[in-house]
Image 1 (spheres, helix red, strand yellow):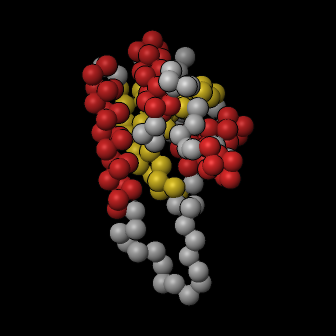
Image 2 (cartoon, rainbow, N blue to C red):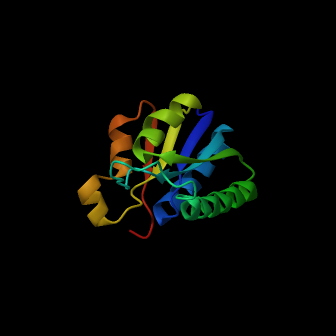
Length: 147
């Protein structure tokens, strides 16, 4: 039923719960997981006249993203499911809802309820809400047991 399941990860409890649910589905359907972390480049503003972004601008964020992906890989390995991983830089909403699913034939997106705090959700809206409204594939939203 589901060959390729996308699991966006941000290190939050909700994304960890989403990974656990996605692993259950992958075992049930023999699916491959697509584990992705997206470094948001839409939070930065640079005035005119610059010569471009510094090459090392995202180094710290790449390191954090790598750790998130490594933990997800360990869990997927321990559960015996197939997976591939990606760390992308861009607009998380577009990458998760459109770009990655279109490029990788995603059948289902399993996403945590929200990984951002209430203030950011109010100001910029949650990625999860955007994905639910705009994705062209099925979306399963997983809520953390702690909420």
